[in-house]
Amino acid sequence: MTQRTISIESPYFLRVETLEGGLDLPAVFGNNNPLALEIGCGTGHFILERATQQPETNFLAIDIYNKGCWKTCKKLDAKPLSNVRVMRIEARYLLSEGLAPDMLAAIYINCPDPWPKKRHRQRRLVNRSFLQTLWHYLQPDGDFYFSTDFYDYAVEVAEIMARLSGYKNQLANTFAHELPGYPLSKYMQRFQQIGKPLYFIHQRRDPELPRRTLPFPKFQRGFRVRWPKSEHG
Ligand SMILES: C[S@@+](CC[C@H](N)C(=O)[O-])C[C@H]1O[C@@H](n2cnc3c(N)ncnc32)[C@H](O)[C@@H]1O
Image 1 (cartoon, rainbow, N blue to C red):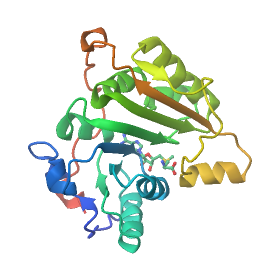
Image 2: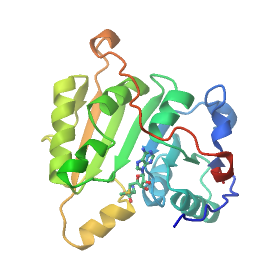
Image 3: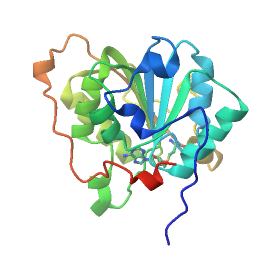
């Protein structure tokens, strides 16, 4: 059964066409403030709080889930925040088509789909190639935040980041179970309620590492690059 695509009519919603020729940030936000990206914003709990905490940063919240984008926009319609925009788009497609290297002050990935079965692990979004790609899109001292309730996903991400050597851990240990002031997403709240520990990673792009040391990886194939026009709503 296919789900009905909800048409999103909100001033906070950016259509994919906005990317043609690259994302024009001053045109979108009306200023030149730094840009942060949330990948997989779900229903928007995190981004609304983070953007309220940081009014001098622009936030782009993306998800491939139409209903999640719609719910995030609904929240923004009710509580206007001029520094947030929402896009229904696949993360790698956005990076390759809409953003430029060194562009992001921060990247947030909260509770990405964990693909817990061993045979499905290769479907995880956050892998070596993706982390290497993100390194290029971060500003030289840009922040990377990752959270999960899956211990082995946290270990995998932390180990890859240590091996890439292009990131600097910002925590006293490999993970933290909480980050002071860090808003809780809907999934985090759920996991907390049932007593599941959360694992947070906070790393920063090492500004000293020359670009040639960490080559730009090829974008992985297999993700859906563009929605049919009828699904853009
Ligand atoms: C488990 S949910 C977590 C949602 C939210 N971050 C939270 O913590 O409540 C993961 C979200 O990531 C989105 N997602 C998965 N792969 C994605 C991709 N490649 N690009 C953009 N969004 C993606 C899913 O549609 C889903 O809404």
